[in-house]
Image (cartoon, rainbow, N blue to C red; front, side, top):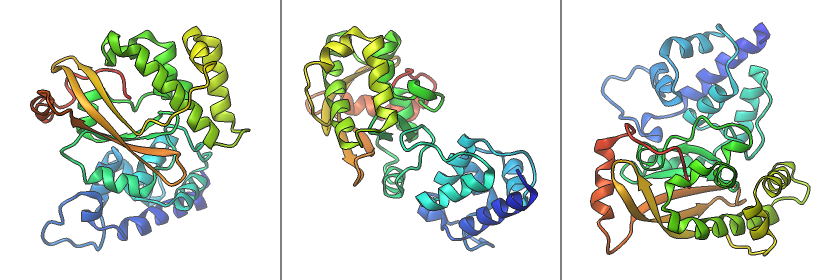
Length: 286
């Protein structure tokens, strides 16, 4: 990165850090704070970076940050879409596509997620790319942070990778497949007809999965707004939950949260998630 942009990058990080109160991002205020906003170590913690590395970024030193790190900093600092794009430009990185794993998270969604510490919750795109999860969601359905490209979409993995289906009992697979296809058709219709991301995904799935092709030909269309589903967990067994969806205004992002289904023992099982943490998780999402 050019020296001038490096300096601007660090100055911009400092200016955004100064405007955020710890309570805005779920951190305690604490006594005797010497800065009006977040401390450097708090931003590093929120972004999953070392304090030394973050200090280097603010000084305009060190190596060029990765796209994933820039996305994490944008989330930590609650940047707007324009501010996030500016940060990518300063770093000399391309701004990610709207549906990618590093895309901008709607600030309202992120704020709501932060306020749900006792409920498994996550933000996904309309193509089922997981953007961010709280710890309980990771404990329930697995950490989705490592997927890139087409595999970032759980719908893509559902139809192309048999192990992705381990998340649900086999008896539920047919219903899940039908619901995923109907939801994808609804998402594709809401996007522009020339949207390369969704058209490429649909073409790939038609080529790779006979099941998907057969369901796609039925032309069913329905957004997933709420579901009652069974999740297979390696330590808890089968947990029956209600999966609720809150959509952003443009429909591109959804906040999902999981609540125990009435008439089951799922409440007790979900209470154990905080104890189990992420030691035993499945490599899937929904």
